[in-house]
Image (tube, rainbow, N blue to C red):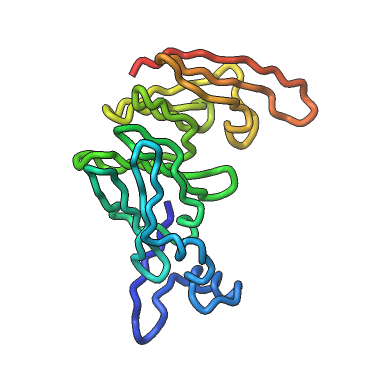
Length: 213
């Protein structure tokens, strides 16, 4: 995750060079002017049906910090978040143990922040999260090459790798070949379609894998 941190100075602007260039390109005096919705959203709680929440607070000219919790827990994430990423930040999943946020990091890519709803566990970051099994705290992420998915046990840290050696995806990313991903009763289900080349006759198959972690 790319994060810009800035401190104010009376002598010169402390914004990162590319942040300044972007602001100048948009004709904005301050970097924050590019993200009015984020500024309007500061200090406002986004609350789930389970009573979990996150809130953004100003940290510097170009960054915010994330506060999250519920009625019994309140925590602040140490890593500042650039306003550019904060603009797309949203709640993706939650249960009694975790609040999972995500934000866009580029074309076809996003980052998930797994925020534990206790005072012991550390925040975990994952790329391209696809499914959260709320019953067993299992989190599925997209992977690369013939490892198409990874199942993470958020409580134990254990991982299970799902591999497609016989029919690998020939697209740049596996998400082009992946269909809906779910877990029910510790059975991972996903749709796998190959080949992905234009004009080729595609073949889809529904895969079922027992989760053992």
